[in-house]
Image (cartoon, rainbow, N blue to C red; front, side):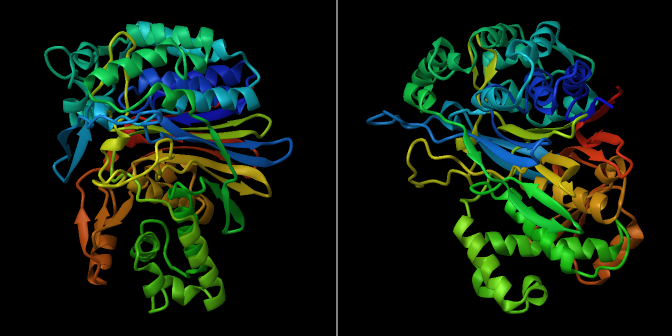
Length: 520
């Protein structure tokens, strides 16, 4: 096999598969897929996104994490203007609501383009322009909306078509339906420019000046200095043993990776009976999710020794060490629930792996005229940027995003990540457990109904066995039963290397994801 790729859209995966078929490595394929996702999955990601890329290099079995998440704006500004934001209420299928702040004042400094260029310089083998070609062609041709995309468009329609530039792309007279085509001519021209001049065109060139100038007139905070001084940060990923394998993921200041690793460490010490989907297995997951919330909250240190799950499973010495590490590395709260995130997982024939997660939040509703670039709204997340918070310009914001690997004897066994904000850590946790512990094929591991614990309630996705949920409820758990599977529970993409050396890839059906294995 040449390799395998899984992503949030068929066209995204096909762009990466094309590069694998040409002999490109995992990072080449991941970058081509990432550029294509800016077109095929434009409500979720784009040049104004932030994200993280975890790379496993086969030749020396090294793992590095590229942090190119968004940063706080305001460098070089003596008296920042009062940011202009508007409130938008998002309805997730009538089951839950969430308020987002959008508009020019919600836009943080983007890092995606800088991160992809840094990854290309360190790891790629194919020319930069070649990796942009599929995205450019697709932006000019247009993308036909799938039913899953049309559903997402309906959820965030008020954001996508908030401004005239957004309505010109996503429907002048009403939201677009499945089967209609999204054409992004301005973005195609921007991508051509980036193919020729690289990231410097945004971080100090004319493209960046256009963005800054437009935001300055509209009440935004991003300055020229913010773009010129933005830097990608190289980090050492966290590593946690689990079920004989090693889980590798995004380190702090992001909180997703360390919380997933902590949860897997707890599960590794539990003796839960029953297979996937059983009341016993769900109860173990929920108890671990409750403990993860304690780890995030201020009551963790005080309560941990009072009969909590971790206190039952760890010695006092190891527990104090774990508490100390979490407190030392704890990041600010992450965004509460932005739907605008996507993930790409790749393994190539040489055993290299790439796991990339990127997001524009829920989108700001601001499309910079003439560029096709939809800016992020990361400053509009209440938990990320609470009223009255004072932070220095240039500071990296935190995130729950957790591109991850499971290594068996130092080789990638599972490459995985997910969309879904605070639900994504639960999605990744459950997929890793399903593959590594329960031995499910990656397709079944992703399709399996998920649970999410929040506010004392266990949200149970549609498709779970009602009898097992009844048993769980009889044990005293308060359940919220969803009728169907829903993108609320995440949007994962994963590649699995099986024991015989073959590869399998799967995207999440909740978001129209797709996996491709590329033959030799």
